[in-house]
Length: 175
Image 1 (cartoon, rainbow, N blue to C red):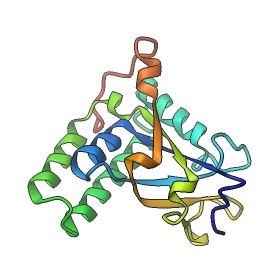
Image 2 (cartoon, one colour):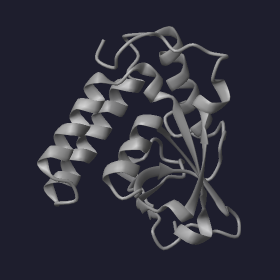
Image 3 (cartoon, rainbow, N blue to C red):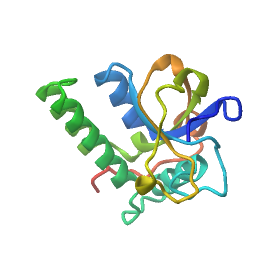
Image 4 (cartoon, one colour):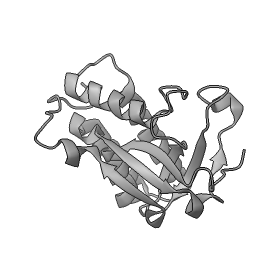
């Protein structure tokens, strides 16, 4: 289903501060996002609900839960993206290795969520509906934007909101 920007002028996505930094520094400030039309639609699966995704990161970061997979999944996504960018020549071997080093030494704090608030009118032609087989559920509303540019979104950095209030666990991502 094509994005209806009259009904849904705003899209929401959640990433991590580390992924945001890497996209800015190495990918020309072009971001890959998986997004939806509501921030906290309880009818959406938790893996697609931006509010619940933020909470998932925060719970793992604050508690230091080694069994939670939220950060591990983000690490996998960042490394997969870096490998793809290397394979198509967007980054070179040195940059690819620098990204791998950043990820392997990242403190939990770098995985604090970043909320992307995306102007649907600016990205309508870039929005690709997620194929049924890849959707979180049969009824979920999901889009991918492979090349979200700086002028197409605003960000809310949870780290700025929580600074001094919530202390992240003193752990590295691989611990």
